[in-house]
Amino acid sequence: MLERNLELNEKIKALVDNVEKVIVGKRESIELVVAAMLAGGHVLIEDVPGVGKTQLVSALASSCKGEFGRLQLTPDVMPTDITGFTMIDPVTRKNEFRKGAAFCNFLLADEINRASPKSQSALLEIMEERQVSIDGMTYELPSPFMVLATQNPVETYGTYHLPEAQMDRFLIKISIGYPNREEELDILMRNERNVSPKQLEQVITCQEIVELSEKISDIYCSDAVREYIIAIVDATRNADFIKLGASPRGSIALYRMAKAYAFVKGRSFVLPDDIKVLAPFVLAHRIVLTPKGKSLVSDNGSAVKRLLEGIPVPVE
Image (cartoon, rainbow, N blue to C red):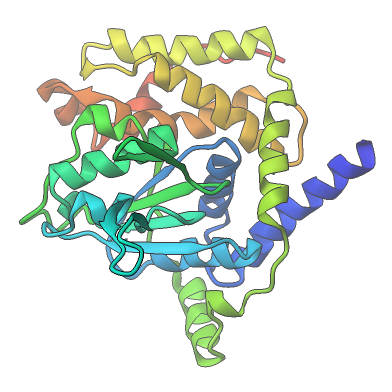
């Protein structure tokens, strides 16, 4: 059993290393996405075009030979494009189910805020239920199943803002950001050598990912760290610069994400520092700032970091 656990831990490291062959200098972002995958969650990536969002998802799928699906969301995308639909087969004259884009392991929902609210709801329902119900029939989605949605924070013309209740469906929200000068030079060199996600070798199987996900619950989290999580989430509900605080789903998400992140880091236990690192990624998109809050901090992530400064860190 111990040997199997060590083998699986090595595979997680190999997975992160493999994706980093394409996504240069963004190891933290890769580790966060891998941790979210192991925790059974979905990721919202809010960033400008061209920083590697699509390549990140494609590299992840190639590294485990999982099925990669992509939806370029626009106002005319219908819910059935996502879920699938039934139609009469012209030969058999019977109803036949045609699968939608959601039937894959890794679904890239590009520019989710450009889809209509009806299509957004269909996608978010699939994320929650991990199944599609049409005409009285239920169809299970493949396992693992993960949605990585993107949105552009700059161009908001013609977009449909995701309601806070729907944003809550994402386990974490991240931003990849621009590379530094050295990293961008490396990107140019790799581009010359045509290093692409499709060329990556398989380092882990989908079945092993499922197996790893089941082991996340075995990661130890002390009572002190659990109390620390609750204190942070409770602080979002009582701060005078936050209008809407995180729900219990936020505390559960932070707890699950902390266990998965510790596993990715090669540990069998959660540290208080894990919570400090993860809190902005897990909670920022679950809160709404007051006008006072918007004048105090630059964004929601900074608001969470401000709260962390006033909460005692448990000594392990």
